[in-house]
Length: 87
Image 1 (cartoon, rainbow, N blue to C red):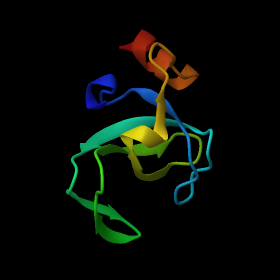
Image 2 (image 1 turned 45 degrees about the vertical axis):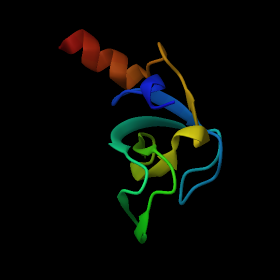
Image 3 (image 1 turned 135 degrees about the horizontal axis):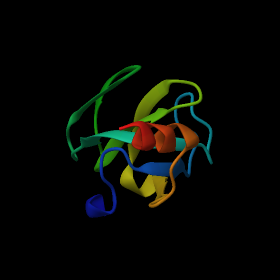
């Protein structure tokens, strides 16, 4: 599953996690390996591979497992489109 995602990809959340509701659009920022020490509200070992994500609308960042994310390949937010055009 890990090869489905790349940093900067957009995804939808399947579950409520921390401060991001299910069905929210997020951007993947950093890969998390199974067993890695995950930072958040405290620290814990990742039970499965996943990603740190950020919800652009709120600025909230948290961690999700791969199976808790739905990829939105090819989908870009208006902000990302603007950055691509100006680059």
